[in-house]
Length: 398
Image 1 (cartoon, helix red, strand yellow):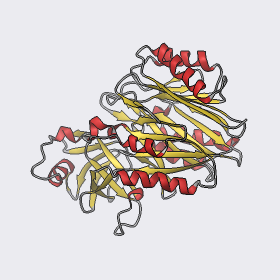
Image 2 (cartoon, rainbow, N blue to C red):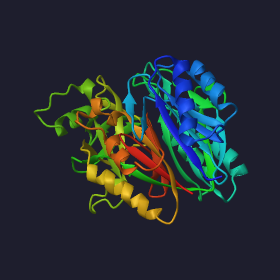
Image 3 (cartoon, rainbow, N blue to C red):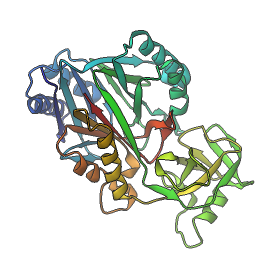
């Protein structure tokens, strides 16, 4: 049987009705009665237990992964901050699916990554080389604290076979870091990592930033974990305030989810190459200590960073999609998945367009699904790298 894929969404406010609608439409769009695998995501405003139970009432015992998402993207829909839900189903004699779950993420991100990597290594065959990973971004709400993708994926890479192409995202229910859920078959979980290993296909990824350097290189001179205290031997908040210019109207508290630092993983003084950068977003600020609290803990004393200016380059998005198409031109492009930072949605960017619209334009003829996430993960210079204020586009070919 040739591969059949169906993507659908729902915006119904009733969790059971939304799940049934999205699941039934996905099967209908694929032209199948029974799926081999499914991606299932829903807004944090839905009751996850009612939602997943209703999904399973339609899909039966179909293996699935997914969870909370701030928003849903398909080839014809973009929605967030409401009751969005999205379901994608697959049926294929060529593509295989093995899904995984790893608990207790909040008790040790690196340990969870190591254990997940071991599980995958033990059963992965040579033909299984595509891996998508989703994890619980939110560790606690007050004070705000995240599960760090840096440590999770460092652990995963210890055992993950080098032949496997991997990408992923940190799931969030909302921007307030309230309880986030993960779906694994018929289970609703939290503080968990879920993943699917696919065979009979290959995956190429491209990183879509939309940020350019707005400063010279700056050196972090005091940091601890995710907290940056000093940059160039000055209190971090004071220096960022100065770099933003005398006429900016932001209060220090407004730097959260706005100020972005970039780390150049390529040639330091070469031409600007956007895909060589890893962006780091400020999660919150400590005004008393004049420090920045970052989404990830990987920036440390001695690291060089640049203040980044957000500016969507629609040509860059188009060229990124075209580049992936050139790589896969001898294969059958089957499916695309877009993991897009929630901060890139129009209400947060101040732009008059959605970057996801440009991705839609480039993928009209293939099944396409995406989610708005808290953190995005892709390979930068052959190492899995957590990213902020970024879109990671995954294109899967038979």
